[in-house]
Image (cartoon, helix red, strand yellow):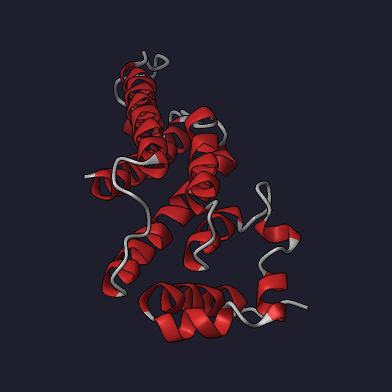
Length: 187
């Protein structure tokens, strides 16, 4: 059974591993902690895949850059998948916090210009394309010809439905948020 606050505890432990050698030394020696990080929810298609992709760096594993870059490359190819976009939006603040914690611990989270940076740049490029695409769709919806309604009936005019417009705008806002975070991470 998973505790409701387990993810918050795992995130705090992840940040502590990056910022403190003592915490890293302790966690890397606890077999049950390492076993927990190989659970299904941390797998590439699991709900905590982003979190799972960052742990190898915290545990100083040799393949950490490969794991993280593969994870972010997935998003470069799946910006049209709503679940992938939401997962990316949830992962990037954690990545940014881990980058700060690792700097505080005296070592970088990933090599600047290395595979993770290149993967983040590819995601940023796809994100820029997605922002332009969703902006275009949003503008088309805004400018679409409304059904003819009597000029005198303002209530009817206001209630003409465009059922897709709110979803498009929410998606656009989510992708813009991702783009901003990526820009900070790669600059």
